[in-house]
Length: 171
Image (cartoon, rainbow, N blue to C red; front, side, top):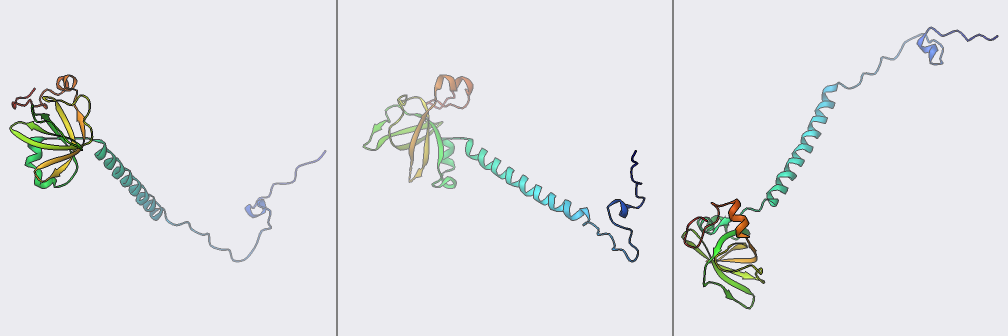
């Protein structure tokens, strides 16, 4: 019958080496946790700020707001040549076909604004309906390259105070 060897009592002997005598090396201390935590915190803040920036930037471009014609005229100087969405109702008798598209007048409240659109208008484009023209100011006109027709029966039911009829009343 075989017996197990005796268990070494010293930790050095437990790791396979004989016990040494003489000076020992001082244990190496790991860096204090403060700088490491600070580094992780800075990296975390940078990542969070980057995520927040991308989120705000993405939402800012995803939200398509519009300005009614009267508000756009009041803000004309500050808008300059920036592209934005202009809302208004197509004035009766104002639609004129051009070689490049269509010109028309939109109204909102007492304001009237000439719109010069390049490209074909949508099939539902007609007088007395709310439209959104995408473009910018150029001189006294609003130059547009896209017209969106609001589906008035659905839109007016959901937002009755936002749509202005040609006579200036809210629909």
